Image: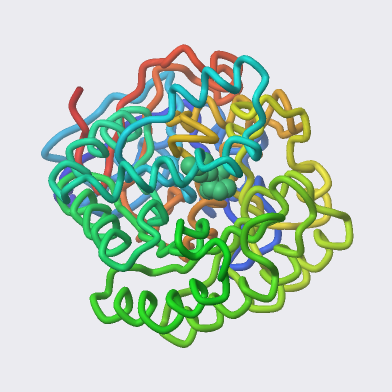
Length: 431
Ligand code: NIG
Ligand code: FE
């Protein structure tokens, strides 16, 4: 008796099955696991001997994964995709973006091309505060209309889950508006959108001489309002020299935790600023950036089970050479995630293929480690382990069927938009 499913992806030549094992704060990115029926077969991750692998999808979930002949015998499908000779991977989980904002900062980009420094531009009133002025002036519909094409391009590239932060409002009304737009993007596109309140992204004009007053405003007014409307899952702080101190970061994250928002930290981006230590102390889900992090911080993150989210696109876009020490982190057993950091000032990259390629070229990661960090690693950074980012029974049917047969080729041709079919929540994304 065969069971009817909605979609069968048949006979893939290679399937990436990255896993951390069962724990959400598991050990490392890039480990391989094959379905039990395949354990006797030799070969690298996801190579299934002479026989391909098929995936059966029912509704928005993966119903079964197994050898092509076994799946063909068990299931009948309303629609099939022939995956012969192709690679199947989980959809990308882009676990760190600031993609809701108004305007652009191309003028500032030109200044940087002539030698101006990102931190100097920010200190003189540009940077994040320039985007704050534009975002405050935009209506909810305008913000949505400006942000939607960015998300649509990401989905076409294979991103099926994306985290979006607020932080270009820095006042109650605009922060809430940004989060509502992020929620609406999740409701109106095939992507799964996870939202993060980041009122602590910078100090707005009017509070720059009285910074603790702004921290109090975040704690006493913004966090309760965000929590009351159920607008965010996470709370994030830019802990950096010249921005939020470790003590201010701790206060905001503890207040967020008390309101049900799980902590994340922008840590050690420009300098070792204490962000990793705070992340470990408050039990953050992730510490992000980490370009300038130290060996001692890596050990603390490891002990506390904090995911290290690396954003090599930002290092690249800022014209810096100090890529995060990914190799050390992987070797120390940290869970590593890769994400774009898409934002108007420090990284305009939207493509996770580009990010994975950069991780290979500049951070010493293998293509397989890169793909694992961009899928199951991203899921861990969003508390979505067991939900998406892996190809196994019960997971969301968030997948990419590539027209090439090996992830190494994708990393090698990272900016060539290699052909792919994206499946989000069981739906084939057209176009
Ligand atoms: O993650 N580091 C802080 N925030 C962003 C930059 C935002 C901006 O420049 O607009 C980042 O890199
Ligand atoms: Fe960021």
